[in-house]
Length: 335
Ligand SMILES: Nc1ncnc2c1ncn2[C@@H]1O[C@H](COP(=O)(O)OP(=O)(O)O)[C@@H](O)[C@H]1O
Ligand SMILES: [Mg+2]
Image (cartoon, rainbow, N blue to C red):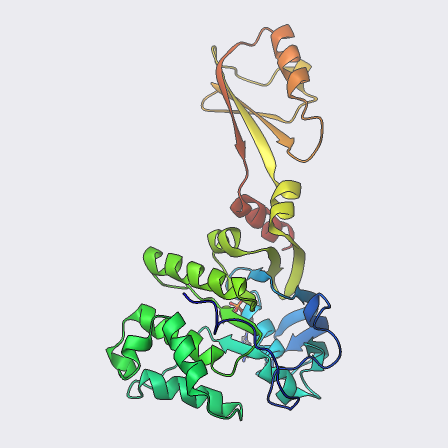
């Protein structure tokens, strides 16, 4: 992939349809700012509850949550597709309600449901998207986008003749046609096979490396773990937590030490009750859980106390909880 066209645009003129920061926010960190956002749908269902969120320029932010958590609602509101209930959203300093066109010009959106006009060609579909933003034609830009997404050879093909992976890339090309600096991907790999998922991940990374801020929603923990610089966990319309992915895993990650015992135990001896111990494997395994983030793990003391209790082990191994374990326990706690 070449580095040119997927780069965040450099604005050359000020106008409603060109993505230009409202104030001098170009150097500021937050490129999207969501404050006190709530949403109640017409049927009375409250889909978002007092959401605050900041997206930093140039990052890949993964909004992770189970189906029905409110991910699509949240990004649809940021993109101005769903009316705001309470709260405020700014995109590059532009209020998405008062200054809709300027805000929208900065945003590319690849929706969860892929709508394509089967009889259109790749070229006209993508060019048309640019026109929707009132931008003057720029065949050179469209060509670069199509080349970068390896769609150039298919530019005259009708969409119905394309594979699923190519159709997805056309949707991304459409979203990039008007040179946005922020790209929203709503469940970019839902229902796609493993190979295509990897291809998408590489593509998204390449976009980020060229300066596009990426916000993706996913219910695949693996995807957030693989892709994100920061992760926001959403459940039941509330943001439960936002953190650097690595911090999240370090802080919330539990470690487990499993000791394979020489002789099985019926119960954990009372002399070891101070430790967080559980028996597993029909009493053949003693599992010690500890906080991976603290300086003192307690392992040295535990081994001393095991010896004093005359409990011998053949082998031991440690395991660090994955983002999946963290996510499952967070979602459970927030219910
Ligand atoms: N137009 C709507 N009217 C009423 N309820 C809706 C509407 N759109 C979504 N919802 C509900 O809001 C909740 C969040 O939906 P959504 O934002 O699509 O979640 P996600 O994208 O995380 O799966 C769901 O319970 C869904 O049924
Ligand atoms: Mg959704």
